[in-house]
Amino acid sequence: MASAGFSRSVSARLSYRNVSVSSPRVSTSAHRKWLVPGYFFNALVLVFFLVSLVLVLGCVLYLYWFRYLSRGGNGLVSAFGGIGEGCNVFEGNWVPSDSYPLYNSSLCPFIERGFNCLANGRMDTNYLRWRWRPRLCEVPRFDAFEILERLRGKRIVFVGDSMSRTQWESLICLLMTGVEDPLSVYEINGNNISKTIQFLGVQFRSFNFTVEFFRSVFLVQQGLPPRYGPKRVKMTLKLDKMDNINRRWVDSDILIFNSGHWWTPTKLFDVGCYFQVGGSLKLGMSINSAFRVALETWASWVESTINTNRTHVFFRTFEPSHWSGSGQKTCEVTNQPTLEAKGNIRSEFTDIIADVIAKITVPVTVLNVTMMGAYRSDAHIGPWSHPSSILDCSHWCLPGVPDAWNELVFASLFRNGWR
Image (cartoon, rainbow, N blue to C red; front, side, top):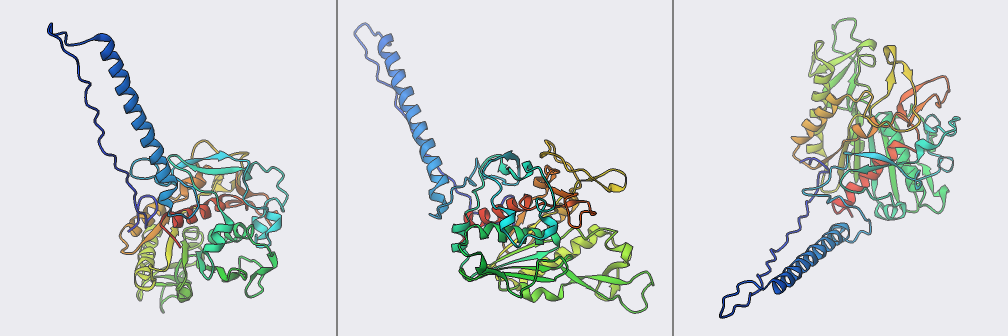
């Protein structure tokens, strides 16, 4: 039940009644003068004027309807109706905008030091001033005050790897711009933001909701291999079983998944991690095949466990990296977005995600952000990491690209009548 743009969507169509203008009656005379030139010309001008007026009024009504009334009165102006059947918000380009960034990183205590490029010495700020613009419509600017009100009493859950944690941190900082008392926002266990903690949860006390992150890089269960397996097998991914902590993801209102960056030979085979289904090792299974089986397990879990009448489920696609040089070990951060999509986009992963979700029987929205990031070689952490000895052309600076992901999440929710 996933659509090409956003799932849960309802396409609005505006039909127009045919407007016919009868031909002007032409005077006749006893001499049968069928056409009087001056009169005929004036009649043509009148017809042309009336038809033009109808077209202009139709366009005005069309724009008014799609930009305002179809929003259901939520006060956010967007044009997801686009042209024709709808707008693919993931096809577009980055445009400069002085109204960005959406928050000040120095005023948000929830940005992990490793993602805070300005605090780590980055001097140029051009990378902060870009806005994602779809080709056929506009994404509404993130309205923290509006969204905070909508989130009262709710629970947002992110599940995935460090890219998911980046989006989690981004959303907290975006929301904090609408909070009067920053001390009313806190990590519920008093933890500092760290990549080593499996669970992080931030409470917005004044609005009674939480934004939570669960670290589950594969989404499926990782554990010890069967007995008597080859010595090279130190651990396995049980592709037919969800991560042990999956029960904690249930009963959320917004549930956002990602996976992909750990599905590499370096993070699997090189450390002795292989695939398992049931009690059988799958030593010859490719990473792409294993990723598909794991996603099918995840899809079955969503169908059987998640109440999608309450929970809006999203799956974000692979975020491209921009490593270059011999062995892909060079990290060169550009001064501005590139005109062409570049980098390692792992398109086969996006294809697998789209294929699996297309077959799912409940509403799931695919956040197809892969090509969005492919233009942003300027927005990676690069040498402005923590510690500074680590180069990083995989993760993104904050503020930055993940803010656009969150804008698209809430644009999707508002478009589909979220309350």
